[in-house]
Image (cartoon, rainbow, N blue to C red; front, side, top):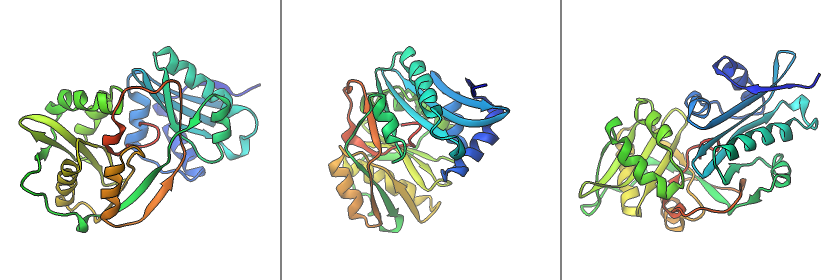
Length: 282
């Protein structure tokens, strides 16, 4: 009998973590939780005789959706399982109203996504920052303070036209998580940027700011926590000014060229994104 396609559940999380480790992917419990429990999410498993042989997920943030967690067990590849999984995820996302769908592809997965109409997007970079090199905030920078759950509506309203979709559920989880300290930048009471630090992963994201000065103030606030000496960030290709500033802080810079998308692009401000979250969340 063919492998059975079904929605994944919390009971599958140990097997999902094991499958990610098997292919050399990082396991972030908070990211899996967000991917499985966000509104308008599709998280599927292919099960064969009680074993998970493939998984895949997607989240629709309105018209913009993100695919992630696309894994087929190494010993079950070239059986069409990836195509079957991707079709199920795409059908679900399109049923939620998404017409622009994006993902980060591994080199082995690009041919599959191309068959489904995904096209390469401009490459980005992954930058390793050493926080001891972050300059002090100058007097003209906006006010920065720790973000609170009561900031959710303001942050979601700021994020939506810049990211391109409604990430209020993801932001709600981040603001409630003490392991992900968040900061908001304000000028005359209006949000001009925010950043979420993830010390356990060594990453910062989401991180958006209206200009480099605001981004610098947010980074200085994270550095002031002294949670760790270094963080990695994944700015968008479109944020040329931000990338130049981040690269000027030193640290390794690595090209990332797995970004792909299909469907019409949306009005958004990718030039203001200093740090993405993870591939499965946007």
